[in-house]
Length: 182
Image 1 (spheres, helix red, strand yellow):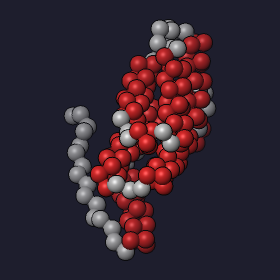
Image 2: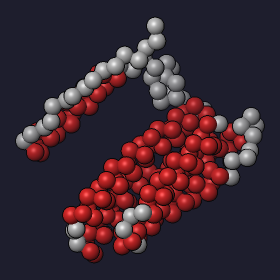
Image 3: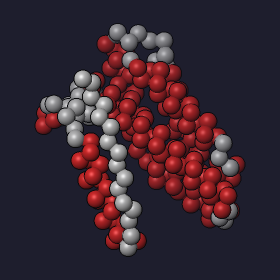
Image 4: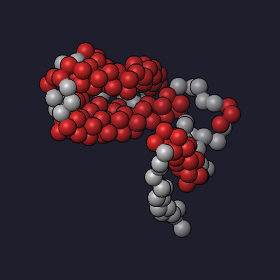
């Protein structure tokens, strides 16, 4: 089980980055709540560190833990946003601190996306609840997915929203590299 090793590393990295936030932001109730979710999740994952990956009961319990962690972290984004709002309301807006916090949030959310994808993939592969309408999928991954078309569709949706709200949108710059083996 790859995730037994990978998830604790990723969670520990996020927790380290959270700990480097400004003290006043760390003291907000919302950020403390997010921090407690990551601590609890890391502790739960570490319980599986030395268990056999071949044991069916261990795989079942690990999958149950993965699903519980995924559900626990459902509200991470709005809770972290609330923490930033609490911080700004209490201490005002400092451009340098705001830039540093935004840099953290960008990294935090990207890391969260990758962790969430791993949690979902494991849940679908080992949780026994695959979708019959997506029989060709491997977990949540469609090996026949046209990634370029998905990106273009996502861009068009984002472009429409930007044009609607900001009267302007950036152009799509997409570089496609063929990664297929000959």
